[in-house]
Amino acid sequence: MDIKIIVATHKKYWMPGDDIYLPVHVGAEGKTDGKGQPLDLGYVKDNTGDNISSKNKNYCELTGLYWAWKNLDADYIGLAHYRRHFTLHPGRGNKKLKPIRREELEPLLAKYDVLLPKKRNYFIETNYSQYAHAHHAIDLDTTRQIIAEKYPEFLRAYDRSMKRTSGHRFNMFIMKRDKFHAYCEWLFDILFELENRLDISEHSNYDARVFGFVSERLLDPWIETNKIRYREIPHVFMENQNWLIKGGNFLKRKIGFDKKWAAK
Image (cartoon, rainbow, N blue to C red; front, side, top):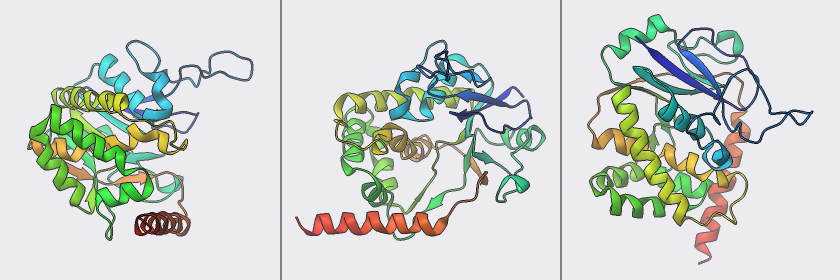
């Protein structure tokens, strides 16, 4: 099988050695080294060919996804992150990291057109309320308007997804080529329209990554509407995470959000 999983990265990092992986320097446009020369990480750059590399601060890993859509030719195309990979051997940290290998992946792709990471569960939050607490609700509200106007057949699945407490995140997937191209065409059409309509001038640097964040909430409606049979597989994060700090930050956002709306 001709498989390529791009590994989105903005810095030099350990990369899997299997030939299915293609490290891509995302946001390469305009990046320089200490001598004023174009920054060269030794990876493919997302500012070659047809690209949106200059939008990286707002689109995150999607500049790499767009590059793959427009410039990469393979039977199966996927996206992983330099610190987050698909695996059949989940564990924590570098010592236990075993990104999925070709010999493990090929039998799965022979049965399924799409592979996704296991869902993230918010338990006490819906997908909509979690996003509203963490970012800006208008991002999702405007996205809904665009879907209603341009792709109404996806609206029911979008609304259902917003009411659920779990979803596929990280913009990670591996898709058969025809599915990949169909998804990217749909996704970027919505995101480019969202970019035209949304005023992010007062967003923080973090929230300005809005199009990357919103896209994570669009994958499930697309999968569901198209009735695509998929398989979930685990993913591994290469570095230890402080879940106490992450949980505390989540509660701060939630309490702050609730107080803001209670005052209205």
